Image 1: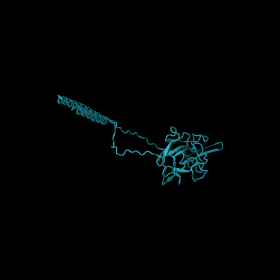
Image 2: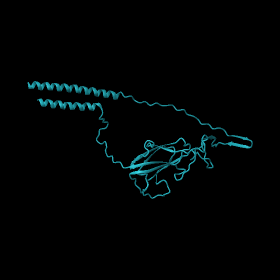
Image 3: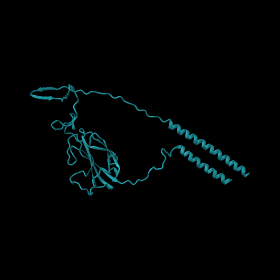
Image 4: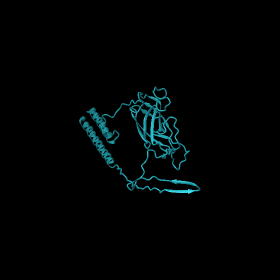
Length: 280
């Protein structure tokens, strides 16, 4: 009688194992089917139109004794004409005087710099890790009709830091000097681009200045359309995060349904074996 009962328990356990194994296999097939049927992204190319630039001929007109003339530079070489070479600062005349956009009032507002990475509007005082590389991204305001040809970024320590520098100078160390004004991103290496002989310490009150290299940062008064020195506050700290993913298999995803099903199957098998052994 006891042997018949034991056989019935074994039969029930084997039937349950077959059912769970079939469910796990079907679930794995569904997962593989869903992964293989994921859509692929195709690149779409957009044709670009090429255009030519034409120059207007020289013209001269005189009215009531007032003469207005407009000349264009011409460069010839062996009978062929070429486009004029861009100068270092196309916003200046040959006599050194500045020119502004014709559609912009010379008495307009100066421009500013907005820090986009990190998002200064979302986090007014971002925290930077000492010893790490910090990615800085910025944009110019709409009033910046005359972007800088060369941009510089410098920093200032919190009040009370012992730094050997000119007390009249805003900057106490340079982050970037005379980088192209067309750039909108720069990676600051806090290990190599700091104040000589002064280490960064944890704390708040650090300042970062963006300014036009042509005008400088100390008492700079740029003209309309130029950027004024823009300052951003930030904090610095030392990272104490030491955990890594060492030992984790590549591509391992613990949330996949297949892994959960197999784990549950093994658990149920162990429970059934324990019950059978208890009644044996």
